[in-house]
Image 1 (cartoon, rainbow, N blue to C red):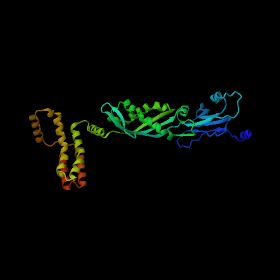
Image 2 (image 1 turned 135 degrees about the horizontal axis):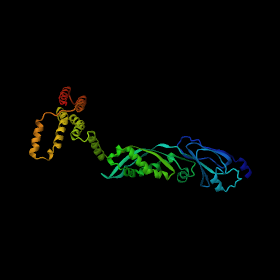
Image 3 (image 1 turned 90 degrees about the vertical axis):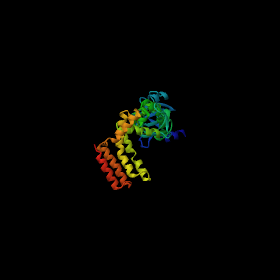
Image 4 (image 1 turned 30 degrees about the vertical axis):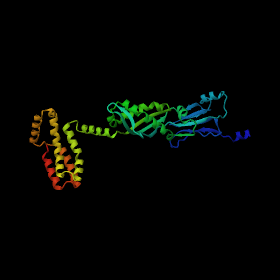
Length: 353
């Protein structure tokens, strides 16, 4: 019976793995009860590594290339099996192939807001998502720590663990970047670099290299988003108070239109208020710069009279055109008549600097 088993047994003389592109990270060569022919060939392609495992212990590791399997090319396995120099018989060993190419476009993201600490706002809740890429760098460590004796181990099997590591280090990345919380959305590249640096060591413990991290979006809480919008608005006007008030006036145009459409104040009066609001902002800015807010009531009254008596403040062409375009939208929606629009446009054109 033993002789018949020996006759039926096949001896493997070529060991290789052709990846199928299905996201496999580790694959065990199907040995069944067969043995490897002494002097057989091992082919390890580019972006692959191969590992021989003897009775649960990792033996020899091979990088890309073609190898003839002898005691010279299998020194660790030779030691573990106590082969002598004349050994030339078939032998048994588990052989695992590993893909070392980059696994790209892996997704990470916060399923729930992550609480972090900020020097300006204390504890805040953050949402973010992006991509990352990694590859196997140490197949021996990956085998012992992750894939083990499974016939096949895929990127999907590992995704949950790696995504958890990314999220675990978001707070460390924010702290390490030194970027104020309100500026995170505008500094996503630096945030991504810090997230990669904070997480790379944990990937290394699994035999992996974290090649890259991207941050595609950072979502702030609604109340902080409003503050950020105001900050952006100030940045658009260069911090100039007069221009900022002009910006706020332009932002309020939709509210004027909505109020008018619901039967609110007079449409003509609202439209005039929009056009005059720009000039009003300039007058108020001049008052602020002159320190009138801290002056005596008599001085403030005199300044108010002077502002009323002053000739209309000229407007820049781009400011006039922006206001006219807003009024044109009101006309297109039927809120302003053609006559009202023409009248207000003529008045605005007279205010050109």
